[in-house]
Amino acid sequence: MRIPEKPRPAMKQSYNFGAKIRSEIRAGRNPAQHMLYFATEAGYVQYREVNNETSQLTHIFMAHPEAIRMYRSYKFVVGIDSTYNTNVYKFPLVEMIGMTPTNHNFTIAYAIMEGENKEYYVWMLEKLRSLLLDGVFPTVIVTDRELGLMNVIPLVFPYSRNLFLIHREKFLKLYTNTITHYGNTSTSRVESAHDVLKEWLHSAGLSVDTIWTRFHALMEGQHVEIRKALEDSRSKSRKDKFGQLFNLLKGNVSMYALGLMGLEFDRVMELGYRLDEGCGHAMRTTHGLPCACDLHRLSTRGRRVHLDSIDDFWRTLVYEEHMALPPGDEGTIEELFTFIRNSNSPTRRRCTEAIYTELHPEDDYVEEPAVNENPRGRPRRSNARNLFGFEHSRRRL
Image (tube, rainbow, N blue to C red):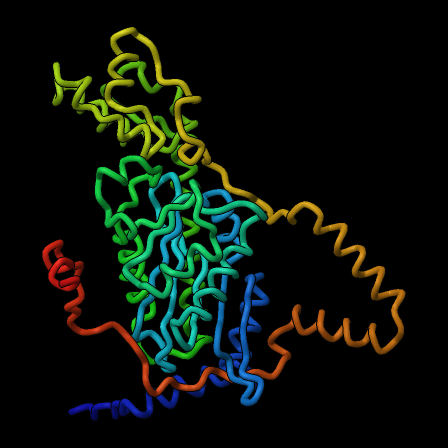
């Protein structure tokens, strides 16, 4: 007896069923309100800009609370890059990436903006800067050749010894070997993070709430891996061939940094009698770790590498547990509450409504962004390149 086959649902039926489930989960909220609701529940720091005429979102900035604590502890390197074809609105999605002493990437924040001009980039960078305490800046900011972004970085993160715009010197070793960049001399770290992100998003037609849900799952996984790697560096002892040389560092310095120093010590044998002139001392400057000649000198004298010779970045194996308020903020908050309590009734009502809207953004009526009909995107084949010297001369003539 032949058993009749069960009818297979059509693709349209599957999509309709998925849409029905999403509608039930949203509980009457539109995608923008749904995103804001769950971001608030998860404790995200969030900023948004809305078109006053249409109530549609134009800018979104989201930062996971644990990612902010990591960023404050590992603020030295920040990678910024845009990716496209990730959402139904055809907006660029900008991801901000940090680096841990265990060589793991973590997403500091992400932004979805309707454009990539100066105004939008300044807005995004100001929100990124607000996550740090006053007067604290990243040491290195890594970007691709996005001129709009490169031009506004000095406006928000003033150009100083603590900030190096890598594209200005085109990654020349002669120059990058004088800057503490912890090995970040290209955008490969950000690009690899983008590859992981696109695997998680897995679609080019996502709404803002679905993007948030998948970003949140991605970041939660990152944090689990980072906590495990930091715990391994604190508790596990790395077996090596260097005897007592690194004994004082084990448990106090990341295992990745120990591996870098091991590779640097191997250069002693490679350079041989040319050690003094061939070392270059780059490791000391670029990574904040002892260079080959330092390690050779300590080894021949039977000494050990001391913790004081290791940059703080590699020694920070515990990041902030709580998001501390900047100095003076508590007093300011108390003053504001006192002012509100002593104000007249209409003023108290307006202040209360403003605070409520900030604490419960999902209750504020906002619509998801409008579709960008003319997205910029990446050129399929970019012929842009840096001109040779003779080409500059020819142009002047």
